[in-house]
Amino acid sequence: MDQGNTAFLLISAALVLLMTPGLAFFYGGLVKAKSVISMMMLSFGAMGLIGVLWVVYGYAIAFPSADGLAAPWSIDWSAIGLTSLLETPEGAAYPPLAFVGFQATFAIITVALVSGAIADRAKFGAWMVFAAVWATVVYFPVASWVFNFGLADDGSFAYGGWITYGMQEFFGVGALDFAGGTAVHINAGAAALALALVLGKRVGFSKGAHVPHNPPFVLLGAGLLWFGWFGFNAGSELAADGTAALAWINTLAAPAAALLAWLVVEKIKDGKPTSVGAASGAVAGLVAITPACAFLTPGWAIVLGLLAGAICALAVDLKFRWGFDDSLDVVGIHLVGGLIGTLYLGFFANGTGLIYSGNLTQLLVQAIAAFSVLVYSFVLAYVIGFIIQKTMGFRVKNEDEIAGIDTVVHGEDAYKLETV
Image 1 (cartoon, rainbow, N blue to C red):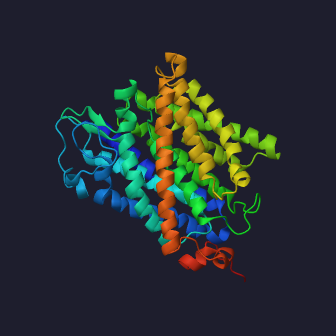
Image 2 (cartoon, rainbow, N blue to C red):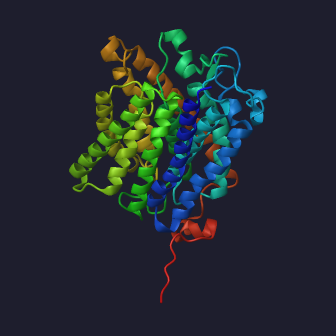
Image 3 (cartoon, one colour):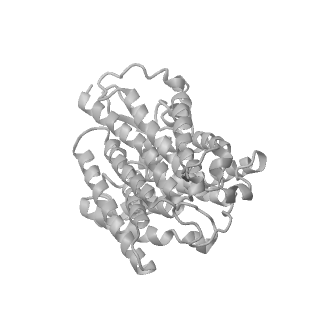
């Protein structure tokens, strides 16, 4: 066992776990002051719930140890409760439980991302029910499609999910998704769009009607997300080596470029570059580089960041044109950014992209992967959300939304103003 790689993986897992509290601050600053606790609790609720479900059965669904390619939806009954993971395979570079913990943090942040689409108007209990069901029937299987690989006795890859490994049998190349452009960002963005449609618009929804109550929170959250994202991307190499270093540099370069591009678009479009725009641009770049961080030279990573920052800055306004209330722009940043990063590899991936190979095969498999996850997640999220809305109710009453749901749902206020 390699203690250096084990330490690298465990530290990376801790960094990724920090992303969820970072997301809570990012989202919390974007909502109105009367619903900031509710918004942040959706992220912390996901940490508690998905952390337990992952250990109990989530890992067993996402990483079944069947022979051959993993089925699109299967479960390893021997891994329920991680009972089969107490022994380390001979020759493995790190303990299996280190990988279990690393992947758990991915599941947590993916579910938490979805909550940004239902800000200011969702019941906490209904959200927890949705999170449990969606994680079980959507995230855990999709994680298997993208991340699952089997370890042989010598610690090498033996088999994997159909998106990244299975399509090699038909096209000669599999889809490239190093750290979760499909499984995390497209997956969460599609589910967010579905929930935004199920819950409907906030009271008084219109452009400029809902402004962030605390931009410093947004900047703090974006900083924590960026910090944790180095573990997210570089840690996905599962080894402290040159590929991890490349992923690290690209995780610096792409979001930096995206931040600048977002501010330029914002200045041209609205006349002023804003702090919220800077934070959103950085996140858009982080989203786009996630699937591509180990497959691009740093120069092409900067180009990707510029594209993602500019396009996502324009995409966030689609909700006003098309009439869906994606409260905190999960669709405009995570779905659109995830699609950009995933499809971009079809053109610029080292060795297999169009400019290197001269053919469109890599772009084809990237598109199959992206839109398969998008459709699967959207349809099931819509069905789950619709059933919850029609049974226990997902959305709070309009009068509670206007009054502020922190007090109604949690019995707390974020800010206590005392007069002397």
